[in-house]
Length: 338
Ligand SMILES: [Zn+2]
Image 1 (spheres, rainbow, N blue to C red):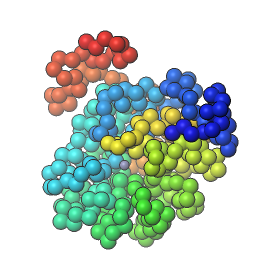
Image 2: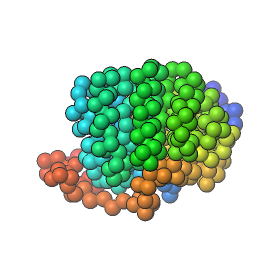
Image 3: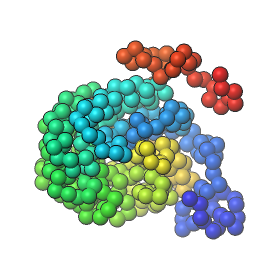
Image 4: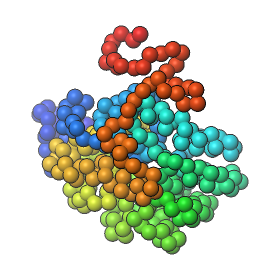
């Protein structure tokens, strides 16, 4: 939200506020220029909840690859089969849908912390996780960790850390909204207790309070640019100014809530406006995520660094994204819809 007094008094762009230029008046056309030619990797976004317009806008903004973590759907699942179908869609239909917009799709598979609290169901989910963890394009166990910090959450967090170890996969750790600092410390301590190498663990949803300890202990620090609740991107600029780009990565975590699938390109533009170097921007919006999740052995940058070939006539199990004889989309900006 735009509430910078300076900007209201003077509507020109690039007004300085405590060292961070504001972007209140900037629209898509303005920031698109700043990041032209840059490539982005969003290591946390829930595309199942997003539309084809989002995919198109992301591709247009330079997002070439993404990771979709398995998570909570907004209401509790009532049986094992819906978990199965969801995991199958992450390695199947959603990956295909993404490919139709030229974006390489990876995922992480896990039992989310909220649903770990339904123990009878959680037990069954644990049994099917290995069926999915070893599939192609699965780059980690995630997102797992704490929500309410209950005993059941801890039990399944620990069990999934063991799964990650035996599958030799990185871990994507969701940290809680409430008691974040304590929950983050606890997540890291348990991971170390299970003998995980911190360079294989991505601690997600950091803020200014947690970042120092996460980096000091050798973990990756991911930041979610999510309106109103997690991080704003002006704050993100300051974090990178203060800590540098090493082991830091930015994501959108866009999902079914009010969120922004263009959070990464927008943040890159804001960093550019604030004189953060192109190399630092590349590390936090692209390369660091590839290094961390690439430990899975599942990421081949040749698959996306020069673009993904798009053919919207392609089919997945006999189905295309084109409904009832639609033609592949070519002119999204046209007023006339045929
Ligand atoms: Zn998420």
